[in-house]
Length: 460
Image (tube, rainbow, N blue to C red; front, side):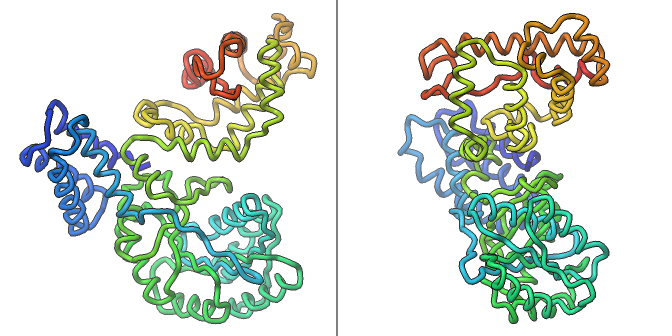
């Protein structure tokens, strides 16, 4: 996410390395590099200049204030604060109050509206314990209704659709009546888009909004389109006066211009960001956390929140007891792996840890490594999963045939598992808070020796 921008900003901060104080000369050189980084990220030049002028003013204004902070650290702090302010300052929630609450989703074709609608339904169902209803009002795009239906089925949410009706305003009105009659407390209306802004699309969305009077209107935009995304947002906002922005495809080759300047330009907050096609790949937007990630500082808070959503306290206590007794087996390991997979893909999770984004930039880490490990465990009998030390050579040969891997790969996995289990057992006997064991006895599974990327290389 924003790798090019992060690299350029890092280079800008290096200009100040080795200096023991802030001066107008070294600040000017750093500021020039920061401005170039922003423009290269598709930020409007005027916005980039205003941004760097504020950074320069703050940096020189603190020349004699923070003696204990190095110039580089001070510049990072100031840029982080200014990036946070540029992107909105603080998180703004979504308004789904009403009987029912109505969320209108608008945007260009291909921006990810339908997928986002499914993600939002899952988010509201799981995080707010609501009963969402998805409404299919894209009556033009081939298979749009089918796509929404497939997404809805996968998360157990109903879809209101009228296959023969080509009037989206009527469909939307009927959906509200259906929601009231069936106790749905929020409806999410997926509207049609076009490849570019045109009058027919704008008029249709306007009519739907006037008819429904939604509690929340969200504009979905593809973040990879950069400054064009900002221009499109301005066009939509002038017609439908939306309440917030959703940035999709942040996992793609995005330069960051839309995320950085859409709030400043349009005056409407970013409310959600979306990465990938998985329906749980939706995050509430926090400007301060995004600024930290752009500056390579990670996002531990979001990582902890993701873990807490999958965390089972009773299960953690059970595992802690088994680890102390050195009884951790393949069933326990498989359960932990499946929990990690629910949190998201490995690379995006590890990028939330400070410093890991750089370390993993070119690392061949993907979920296929976990899939291969799962295949080995799922080829075992229930007895073998519960008795890791009893797997003999003949059993290993049978496992290799069952999971489609060779004997060397099975041996490597067994070796890594045993090393990991031994290390966890040793850690469990130490006082809480030491050697990486968090206070309270929390437990995390370290990667196999050599890392997952090593396992991946050896298993291919």
